[in-house]
Amino acid sequence: MEEKRSVKLALLGLGTVGGGVYKLLERQKEELLDKAGASLELVKILVHNIKKERAGVDASLLTDKWEEIIEDPQIEIVIEVMGGIEPARTMILEALNAGKNVVTANKDLVAEYGRELLDAAQKNQVDFLFEAAVAGGIPIIRPLKQCLASNEIDEVIGIVNGTTNYILTKMFEEGMDFEEALAKATELGYAEADPTADIEGLDAGRKVAIMASIAFHSRVTFSDVYTEGITKISAKDIGYAKEFDSVIKLLGVAHNTEWGIEVAVHPMIIAQDHPLASVRDSFNAIFLHGDAVDDVMFYGRGAGELPTASAIMGDVIDVARDIRYQCTGRISCTCYRDTLVKEFKDVKNKFFLRMQVDNKPGVLAAIASVFGVHKVSISKVIQKVITDGVAELVIVTEAVKEYHMEDAIEHLKDMDTTREISSVIREY
Ligand code: NAP
Ligand code: HSE
View 1 (cartoon, rainbow, N blue to C red):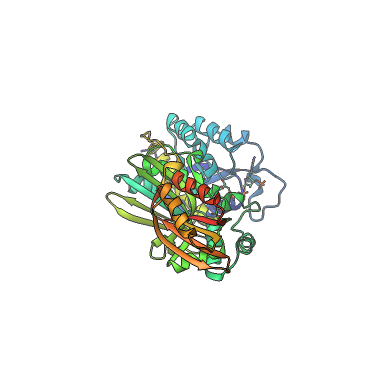
View 2: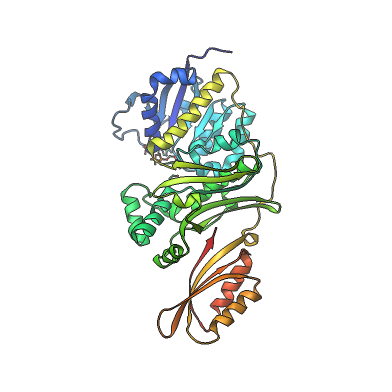
């Protein structure tokens, strides 16, 4: 075993997460020698705007020249926290091909180019770790790859976007409408200036693709994930969820079935007594089932400066240990299967459907027969008269294939007695 006393690091990006990594490196300076078996020395920080004022940061470390990092043979770990696909992808590939280990928080990149990056790491016998890319500070990648490695995992479901969980919590508990709750989430810094990726389920979709790949040992990319956001959830829907002793959550759902992998992100009505129903505000949680371990849940902060930096630094310490024991590249790609990802139209779900219809004899019977024609079995019907002429119908179905439900909805829309299909939400 080689006695390593110092490992040199470069940081790509000094924004929210990069700033957190910088702080933890300072805070843990003395401890790291014992924890990692080597002192960790930050020698370069790549930024976009070198002129920006950065309080508390050693300005001599800053650079806007990638060559100063990639061409320095002493830098053994590159921490990528810039975000986006390019130039992050090219820089990471160049770093791996130069024999440097890489730690990243970049879910966009891992969800799309994970295979390419892991292959490059394997070829060069270096570590490529990305614990922070899924659910920020919550350990989930390492537990899946290591602690739970002997399990056959058949289900991973998670609340993996803090912004949308905060919005839904405020709508449920304080009666806020969507716009008001989104404004509050933006004010608190949870939502991005452009919140599309959060509220449309794209951010969660990327995280679920990464988790499904690792849990089921078969590559799932972001393009395989059906995504639907929370913008259509209304106070009325929340009211019905309460009536059903349930809540509405944006869930990432992945199943490994006999017929292939099912993977999606969409709002779901979930019973109050499910552990995920109690995950409030901007917290995240991942619930999974393995054949040996049974049910497991991971809960915590899914984003933010220090929680995300905590996951990054866990990876960095692991790499430093691997460098010390000369075993980098020990745990690389774990996708040794090639399982089909099912088309979403073939996935089965239970549905909650709320619609406005003419309030007259025979309407309910006609609607029931449409469901029958399209092989949709009904489990519950609630009718509330809104005005003399209009009734609000809520229909909850048994589990049915997505395309049967879609056909039934199209058929219902064509009926003269249908005023509006107000909402369609899946039920867990
Ligand atoms: P951020 O605050 O926008 O910071 C990005 C940093 O990268 C900035 O310092 C910026 O430089 C630098 N940068 C961007 N493009 C660059 C380029 N082409 N060349 C050099 N430097 C460049 O982003 P963040 O919130 O820290 O997120 C970073 C990564 O972590 C993303 O992949 C994100 O998805 C992931 N992540 C974030 C969170 C979170 O809570 N924020 C949680 C989990 C994962 P300047 O400072 O000069 O502008
Ligand atoms: N925008 C994300 C969230 C955090 O709200 O959870 C970064 O993954």
